[in-house]
Image (tube, rainbow over all chains, first blue to last red; front, side):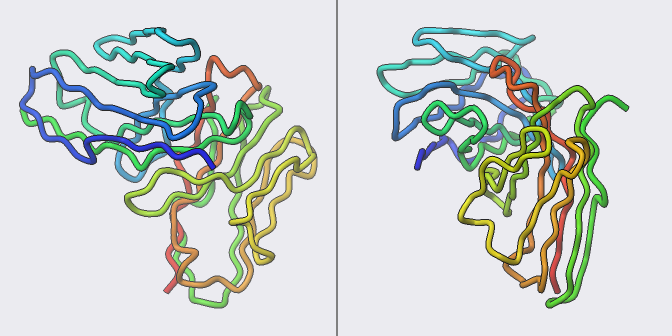
Length: 112
Length: 114
């Protein structure tokens, strides 16, 4: 099975600071997805990365994929309290889009 | 409402009782998924439907669990003879199958078995 390890497990930052969350896969990555989850809520799709070296941005959130390292990073610039939540990376199970594996998440708190 | 709807949001049940959850996907999405999420963990795949056909099931889905999508629209997930270990958030998602956009998740049903 695909295993995704996220680091750090939790993070507390001061508003305005930058931060990075990492997701490392034990298997070949066919598609890497980033989601955000508010506590006790469903997941909100942020972005999907497929090709090595690919980088995507959405507002102040940027994600990159390093295919060789089987790793993705999510970077938030000038964090705001609205960025607080749990960030989850997910990946296709051997390219099967209809079956994802998720990391255990990174809990982010942003102090005003 | 154009999102994925799940009902109920919360369910507390006694051990041994049966429970049923409902998911209404985005109307034009032909694929529907069920995931289970326990505290501090990421979601785990349970099963997936393409239209009304259940195409894949996880080994996590024991014989006490059954999912249906009778007309290819809404889906139900039933758990029979609930156990305390079934306590979790049950998430439903839907998609058109375009990986670029991932899945659209509902807000989940939180089940507590007492």
